[in-house]
Length: 260
Image (cartoon, rainbow, N blue to C red; front, side, top):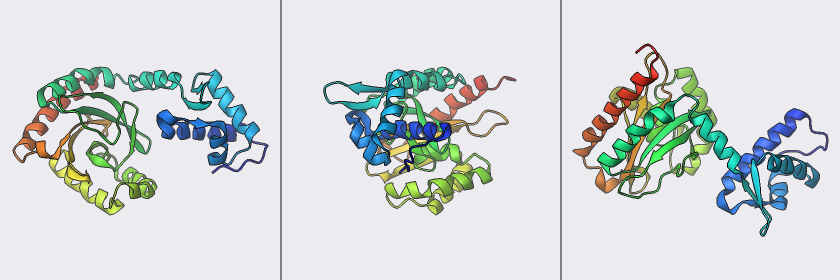
Protein backbone atom coordinates (compact mmCIF):
# COMPACT_ATOMS: atom_id res chain seq x y z
CA UNK A 1 0.00 0.00 0.00
CA UNK A 2 1.39 3.38 -1.00
CA UNK A 3 1.58 6.35 1.37
CA UNK A 4 -0.04 9.43 -0.13
CA UNK A 5 1.77 12.50 1.14
CA UNK A 6 0.26 14.76 -1.52
CA UNK A 7 3.67 15.77 -2.84
CA UNK A 8 4.74 12.86 -4.99
CA UNK A 9 7.82 13.20 -7.15
CA UNK A 10 7.92 12.15 -10.78
CA UNK A 11 9.45 8.83 -9.82
CA UNK A 12 6.80 8.22 -7.16
CA UNK A 13 4.02 8.99 -9.61
CA UNK A 14 5.53 6.58 -12.12
CA UNK A 15 5.78 3.87 -9.46
CA UNK A 16 2.14 4.45 -8.51
CA UNK A 17 1.01 4.38 -12.13
CA UNK A 18 2.75 1.04 -12.65
CA UNK A 19 1.23 -0.29 -9.41
CA UNK A 20 -2.25 0.73 -10.60
CA UNK A 21 -1.70 -1.00 -13.95
CA UNK A 22 -0.66 -4.19 -12.16
CA UNK A 23 -3.67 -3.90 -9.86
CA UNK A 24 -6.03 -3.59 -12.82
CA UNK A 25 -4.29 -6.51 -14.49
CA UNK A 26 -4.96 -8.66 -11.44
CA UNK A 27 -8.62 -7.57 -11.39
CA UNK A 28 -9.19 -9.14 -14.81
CA UNK A 29 -12.41 -8.59 -16.71
CA UNK A 30 -14.34 -7.37 -13.66
CA UNK A 31 -12.16 -4.25 -13.39
CA UNK A 32 -12.17 -1.79 -10.49
CA UNK A 33 -13.96 1.43 -9.66
CA UNK A 34 -12.00 4.58 -8.86
CA UNK A 35 -13.03 4.23 -5.22
CA UNK A 36 -11.76 0.64 -5.07
CA UNK A 37 -8.41 1.69 -6.52
CA UNK A 38 -8.12 4.48 -3.93
CA UNK A 39 -8.88 2.10 -1.06
CA UNK A 40 -6.58 -0.71 -2.20
CA UNK A 41 -3.70 1.63 -3.04
CA UNK A 42 -4.18 3.79 0.06
CA UNK A 43 -4.05 6.95 -2.04
CA UNK A 44 -6.18 10.09 -2.00
CA UNK A 45 -8.85 10.63 -4.64
CA UNK A 46 -7.10 13.51 -6.48
CA UNK A 47 -3.89 11.47 -6.82
CA UNK A 48 -5.65 8.38 -8.20
CA UNK A 49 -7.84 10.49 -10.49
CA UNK A 50 -4.81 12.27 -11.93
CA UNK A 51 -2.91 9.03 -12.59
CA UNK A 52 -5.85 7.05 -13.96
CA UNK A 53 -6.95 9.94 -16.19
CA UNK A 54 -3.44 10.12 -17.69
CA UNK A 55 -3.38 6.36 -18.26
CA UNK A 56 -6.78 6.57 -19.91
CA UNK A 57 -5.66 9.36 -22.25
CA UNK A 58 -2.86 7.14 -23.49
CA UNK A 59 -5.16 4.15 -23.95
CA UNK A 60 -3.45 2.14 -21.22
CA UNK A 61 -6.71 1.82 -19.27
CA UNK A 62 -10.34 1.88 -20.42
CA UNK A 63 -13.42 2.98 -18.46
CA UNK A 64 -16.76 1.32 -19.01
CA UNK A 65 -19.39 4.03 -18.94
CA UNK A 66 -22.21 1.94 -17.52
CA UNK A 67 -20.35 0.38 -14.59
CA UNK A 68 -17.70 3.11 -14.25
CA UNK A 69 -15.10 0.38 -13.81
CA UNK A 70 -11.57 0.59 -15.16
CA UNK A 71 -9.74 -2.20 -16.99
CA UNK A 72 -6.46 -2.48 -18.83
CA UNK A 73 -6.61 -0.90 -22.29
CA UNK A 74 -5.88 -2.42 -25.66
CA UNK A 75 -2.83 -0.17 -26.07
CA UNK A 76 -1.09 -2.35 -23.50
CA UNK A 77 -1.91 -5.46 -25.52
CA UNK A 78 -0.44 -3.86 -28.64
CA UNK A 79 2.70 -2.88 -26.74
CA UNK A 80 2.99 -6.36 -25.29
CA UNK A 81 2.65 -7.95 -28.71
CA UNK A 82 5.43 -5.72 -30.06
CA UNK A 83 7.61 -6.57 -27.06
CA UNK A 84 7.01 -10.28 -27.63
CA UNK A 85 8.16 -9.92 -31.21
CA UNK A 86 11.10 -7.69 -30.28
CA UNK A 87 13.60 -10.56 -30.44
CA UNK A 88 11.80 -12.35 -33.27
CA UNK A 89 11.24 -15.28 -30.91
CA UNK A 90 7.46 -15.39 -31.25
CA UNK A 91 7.57 -15.27 -35.04
CA UNK A 92 10.28 -17.92 -35.24
CA UNK A 93 8.57 -20.24 -32.76
CA UNK A 94 5.00 -19.96 -34.09
CA UNK A 95 5.31 -22.77 -36.74
CA UNK A 96 6.83 -25.07 -34.11
CA UNK A 97 3.97 -24.41 -31.70
CA UNK A 98 1.44 -25.15 -34.43
CA UNK A 99 3.14 -28.44 -35.34
CA UNK A 100 3.43 -29.51 -31.70
CA UNK A 101 -0.23 -28.75 -30.98
CA UNK A 102 -1.35 -30.61 -34.12
CA UNK A 103 0.86 -33.64 -33.42
CA UNK A 104 0.22 -33.96 -29.69
CA UNK A 105 -3.38 -32.74 -29.63
CA UNK A 106 -2.55 -30.82 -26.46
CA UNK A 107 -2.15 -27.06 -25.82
CA UNK A 108 1.37 -25.73 -26.30
CA UNK A 109 2.85 -22.62 -24.68
CA UNK A 110 5.83 -20.42 -25.49
CA UNK A 111 7.06 -18.94 -22.21
CA UNK A 112 9.73 -16.24 -21.86
CA UNK A 113 11.32 -14.68 -18.83
CA UNK A 114 10.07 -11.25 -17.77
CA UNK A 115 11.98 -10.17 -14.67
CA UNK A 116 10.94 -12.41 -11.78
CA UNK A 117 8.10 -13.94 -13.82
CA UNK A 118 7.65 -16.22 -16.79
CA UNK A 119 5.29 -14.70 -19.36
CA UNK A 120 3.15 -16.52 -21.90
CA UNK A 121 4.34 -15.07 -25.21
CA UNK A 122 2.29 -17.33 -27.46
CA UNK A 123 0.11 -20.42 -27.32
CA UNK A 124 -1.56 -22.88 -29.66
CA UNK A 125 -4.62 -24.81 -28.65
CA UNK A 126 -4.71 -28.53 -29.35
CA UNK A 127 -7.69 -30.88 -29.63
CA UNK A 128 -7.94 -31.20 -25.86
CA UNK A 129 -9.05 -28.05 -24.04
CA UNK A 130 -7.58 -27.61 -20.55
CA UNK A 131 -6.80 -24.69 -18.29
CA UNK A 132 -3.28 -23.50 -17.47
CA UNK A 133 -1.72 -21.42 -14.71
CA UNK A 134 -0.88 -18.59 -17.10
CA UNK A 135 -4.06 -18.82 -19.15
CA UNK A 136 -4.06 -16.33 -22.03
CA UNK A 137 -1.16 -14.77 -23.92
CA UNK A 138 0.37 -12.20 -21.58
CA UNK A 139 -0.42 -14.27 -18.49
CA UNK A 140 2.37 -14.52 -15.94
CA UNK A 141 3.58 -16.93 -13.31
CA UNK A 142 6.41 -16.54 -10.77
CA UNK A 143 9.72 -17.98 -11.90
CA UNK A 144 10.06 -21.30 -10.11
CA UNK A 145 6.40 -22.29 -10.38
CA UNK A 146 5.62 -25.04 -12.89
CA UNK A 147 7.78 -26.77 -15.51
CA UNK A 148 7.66 -23.92 -18.06
CA UNK A 149 9.34 -21.43 -15.71
CA UNK A 150 11.58 -24.02 -14.05
CA UNK A 151 12.98 -25.08 -17.43
CA UNK A 152 14.18 -21.49 -17.90
CA UNK A 153 15.29 -20.94 -14.32
CA UNK A 154 17.43 -24.10 -14.24
CA UNK A 155 19.74 -22.75 -16.92
CA UNK A 156 20.39 -19.27 -15.48
CA UNK A 157 23.56 -18.36 -13.52
CA UNK A 158 23.50 -19.63 -9.92
CA UNK A 159 23.74 -16.14 -8.41
CA UNK A 160 20.72 -15.08 -10.45
CA UNK A 161 18.78 -18.18 -9.41
CA UNK A 162 19.46 -17.36 -5.76
CA UNK A 163 18.03 -13.85 -6.10
CA UNK A 164 14.94 -15.01 -8.00
CA UNK A 165 14.13 -17.73 -5.46
CA UNK A 166 14.67 -15.34 -2.56
CA UNK A 167 12.35 -12.71 -4.04
CA UNK A 168 9.68 -15.17 -5.21
CA UNK A 169 9.60 -17.37 -2.10
CA UNK A 170 6.72 -15.43 -0.46
CA UNK A 171 4.71 -15.86 -3.67
CA UNK A 172 5.10 -19.65 -3.63
CA UNK A 173 2.66 -19.96 -0.73
CA UNK A 174 -0.33 -19.63 -3.06
CA UNK A 175 0.82 -22.74 -4.96
CA UNK A 176 0.25 -25.37 -2.31
CA UNK A 177 3.29 -26.74 -0.51
CA UNK A 178 5.81 -25.32 -2.97
CA UNK A 179 8.97 -24.07 -1.25
CA UNK A 180 12.28 -22.56 -2.28
CA UNK A 181 14.02 -25.80 -1.33
CA UNK A 182 11.67 -27.93 -3.43
CA UNK A 183 12.15 -25.68 -6.43
CA UNK A 184 15.93 -25.84 -6.07
CA UNK A 185 15.80 -29.65 -5.96
CA UNK A 186 13.75 -29.63 -9.17
CA UNK A 187 16.29 -27.39 -10.88
CA UNK A 188 19.08 -29.90 -10.22
CA UNK A 189 17.00 -32.68 -11.80
CA UNK A 190 16.13 -30.52 -14.81
CA UNK A 191 19.80 -29.79 -15.53
CA UNK A 192 20.53 -33.52 -15.42
CA UNK A 193 17.76 -34.69 -17.76
CA UNK A 194 17.34 -31.54 -19.90
CA UNK A 195 13.62 -31.03 -19.40
CA UNK A 196 11.09 -30.17 -16.69
CA UNK A 197 8.04 -32.25 -15.86
CA UNK A 198 5.11 -32.09 -13.47
CA UNK A 199 2.79 -35.08 -13.18
CA UNK A 200 -0.13 -33.38 -11.50
CA UNK A 201 1.53 -32.31 -8.25
CA UNK A 202 1.04 -28.57 -8.82
CA UNK A 203 -2.52 -28.72 -10.15
CA UNK A 204 -4.41 -31.96 -9.58
CA UNK A 205 -5.19 -33.72 -12.82
CA UNK A 206 -3.05 -31.47 -15.02
CA UNK A 207 0.51 -32.31 -16.08
CA UNK A 208 3.11 -30.50 -18.15
CA UNK A 209 6.45 -31.05 -19.87
CA UNK A 210 8.78 -28.17 -20.82
CA UNK A 211 12.11 -27.90 -22.61
CA UNK A 212 14.28 -24.76 -22.44
CA UNK A 213 15.31 -22.70 -25.46
CA UNK A 214 19.08 -22.34 -25.15
CA UNK A 215 20.72 -20.46 -28.03
CA UNK A 216 24.46 -21.27 -28.27
CA UNK A 217 26.53 -19.37 -25.71
CA UNK A 218 23.50 -17.85 -23.96
CA UNK A 219 21.38 -18.50 -20.88
CA UNK A 220 17.90 -19.94 -21.32
CA UNK A 221 15.73 -17.25 -22.87
CA UNK A 222 12.44 -19.13 -23.01
CA UNK A 223 10.82 -22.56 -22.95
CA UNK A 224 8.11 -24.44 -24.77
CA UNK A 225 5.67 -26.43 -22.66
CA UNK A 226 2.99 -28.96 -23.48
CA UNK A 227 0.11 -29.08 -20.99
CA UNK A 228 -2.07 -32.16 -20.79
CA UNK A 229 -4.31 -34.07 -18.45
CA UNK A 230 -2.40 -36.39 -16.16
CA UNK A 231 -4.38 -39.30 -17.60
CA UNK A 232 -2.83 -38.56 -21.02
CA UNK A 233 0.73 -38.55 -19.68
CA UNK A 234 1.59 -42.22 -19.70
CA UNK A 235 5.10 -43.38 -18.90
CA UNK A 236 5.66 -44.30 -22.55
CA UNK A 237 4.50 -40.90 -23.77
CA UNK A 238 7.05 -38.85 -21.80
CA UNK A 239 10.08 -39.62 -24.06
CA UNK A 240 7.88 -39.18 -27.13
CA UNK A 241 6.84 -35.65 -26.10
CA UNK A 242 10.36 -34.72 -25.01
CA UNK A 243 11.70 -35.81 -28.42
CA UNK A 244 9.03 -33.74 -30.21
CA UNK A 245 9.83 -30.67 -28.12
CA UNK A 246 13.59 -31.08 -28.39
CA UNK A 247 13.51 -31.47 -32.17
CA UNK A 248 11.49 -28.29 -32.65
CA UNK A 249 13.56 -26.34 -30.14
CA UNK A 250 16.86 -27.28 -31.79
CA UNK A 251 15.53 -25.73 -34.99
CA UNK A 252 14.46 -22.56 -33.13
CA UNK A 253 17.87 -22.28 -31.44
CA UNK A 254 19.59 -22.50 -34.81
CA UNK A 255 17.46 -19.66 -36.17
CA UNK A 256 18.25 -17.54 -33.10
CA UNK A 257 21.98 -18.07 -33.54
CA UNK A 258 23.29 -15.33 -35.89
CA UNK A 259 26.48 -17.36 -36.48
CA UNK A 260 24.67 -20.52 -37.58
